[in-house]
Length: 273
Length: 267
Image 1 (cartoon, rainbow over the protein chains, first blue to last red):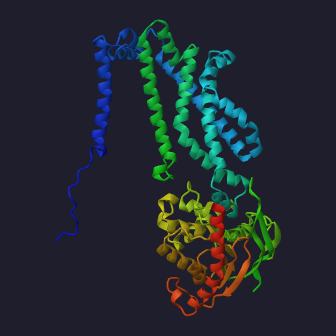
Image 2: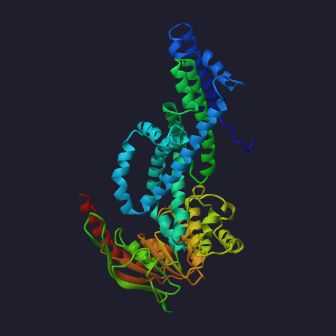
């Protein structure tokens, strides 16, 4: 006699087999690249406009080779990432401070509400030329565009989180002896941070996009400028090389943030993460 | 015994924005003696939770005076324990950190906090879960953590606002027994709010029945059942049923009135 219950051999659905899903995902990417290459060689996609993987992948490798004629690729990456990080950090801090203040002070919030809604309604990218005129073609104008993009995301997240904080939590800590600043640091700010972390990947993505677009419109360094230069020479291979490089960087950035997000939300129920 | 909690002619008018103001409780007089377990029952919307929030100083009375141990309530009282109906644990803090909060707010050192928190974690049988987050616990465990959180500073008054109403019946009976056990020899005064007459009788020394809103005190009954009690058995004790019937005849009319009013306001 055995104590163990033998379960019927249940078939695990394919969608739940990790290796299968990974292989499928890789297959889709390879098919996409293969189709692009094939259609390009067959003349369906004109390589003059659409380039081909076999053209722009070596181009990217060439950029990374020492003594490349296209300028230092590491410098471009460094410039773009610096702009991204600065835009992200400044935008997040401003959004947090203003969002918190508006949520805590009703009158302040009401007074500025129409103005902020108006600013938020502007497609922020049209501000890029304004910033370039005002702050020049260097770092500052790119950071400024990133800040305006990140600010509103963090601002709205913080504002809603602090305003809608569970009053039971506040009442409870007050009875437990919390002073005003204890309520801020134990309840309100953690609630705000939780909302900010949830919007972290979106806002970082926007900071990156802001930097690249502003570089494209006017600058002397960065990945956006690299694309603009290639475009000026009708060099679609250079344009696609830049785009692919940017996509890979964004992917890397996003997976780093995903890691950070996971670490900082251990306290959340799984379905809310 | 001197009264631990007193309410004298306490009324509360709520003024919600863009709605007509309404009277939640009207001229409530109540004395709760030190060490007594008193339950307030009433239909929903009778303002029984309002009484508790007033005693804790979370809201201010429109008229009347409230004192706890001869000390008038003017601001939030930190010398009481308060158990909320809803989850009040900070979700981003572990069980141990949550239970430590009141001591941290009082500026105690690390060692001193641990010395006082550890026995409480053991008493509510949460020591193995000290480093878990609230969402990882069951509803009953979260209630026990909240009990420890409130009792760690040894308040002489415990205010409880339908604390077990969200639990399933079995867990609820277990929690009620644990509460009676913790309260037993502590000498603490308990003011317990519930809409459940059976729970009120099983737990208390005295029963207060409220009218449908605006809440007034309709009747008060001593509960002459012997202690220690087991809440799942006390309902078979002699005296339980007759008290239940008398109190229910008071409560029934109020429940019906409250129900009819809710139908009218819904239509």
